[in-house]
Length: 182
Image 1 (cartoon, helix red, strand yellow):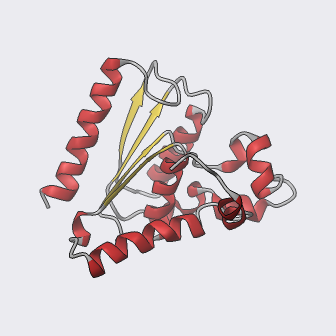
Image 2: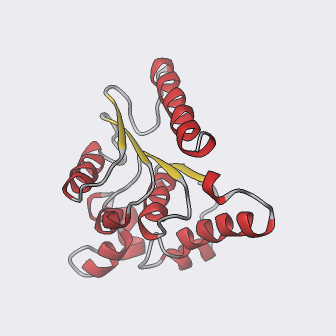
């Protein structure tokens, strides 16, 4: 959830976004399979913005835990995000490049083994479109298979009815193919 970034959250992600927070999502998926009888081959992960970032880090760092993932407007490299927000967590890129490397999905992309759908609005003024484009380029260089949806007139969160319908139809189809029809 996006509300209530409290002290524990800020402490957990200090100098390492995508570590303890992603470990929690992975632990939850494994717990569902181990104790609740959930078929691990049918667990997907989906998020928007920071949730999209967590989706990428989950798939890249823990291949095989999630059967598929959808990252919408996800940060792929924290060095290209808002430095006033990010610097409070990771410091400045020049001062602590290792924190940025450890926390940025683009540097973990080689770990992708599971189906991934990347969605991004070309008019995103929060997580800029170039972030998604750089990740797509990196995944192509690595020879990875993935799907992409770009929405030409959408900002950070999809606003128009046509694009919302398009995205949710594609989201449902993607998860149906990779989770239900396995």
